[in-house]
Length: 212
Image 1 (cartoon, rainbow, N blue to C red):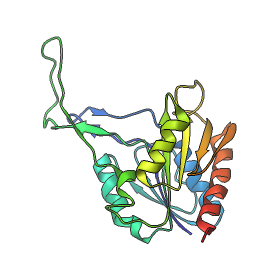
Image 2: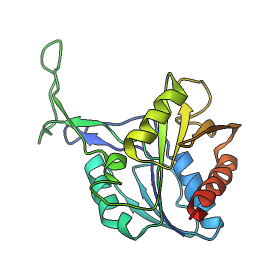
Image 3: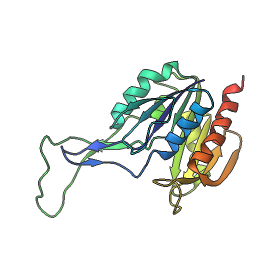
Image 4: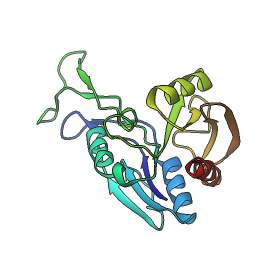
């Protein structure tokens, strides 16, 4: 099976020395890439900046911005059987990027933002992807309801949801507790190390890919 995985954060530049990002470490996406490769699948990992080593047997395309990730996914997704969108992509970016370092003036600074392209939301429509589509939902409330709404709105076969408000799991942690949200049911996976959760998620995705 040919698998595309996105992972890590994106960086949206403000000026030559500053950028906006988020707390994603990329650990869950990299753990999934490793688990897919160990299961014998061909893996393409499109990743924002992380401090992680590329897993053995995995091809890497490094990106920084959401626009760069969108372009990389658009270019490669057509030859994939499965796409797993684990990256924490910035929803918005600064409307303009200063060519010089922004100097400190006054007591406040107002920035204008514009919406980034929706990578997961483009998979079924703009990219015409017909394979198994898996998204992630990092939520702070109404975990299952928000994840199920996302699954339906974006045409996913599976959403992997986790509550990032819980201390010690999720963003920037080695541990996670996730809810697998299918169109007709949900299944919780107990809290565990991300590299232990990843093979369980891979097996779930393999079952989806095997369905006629």
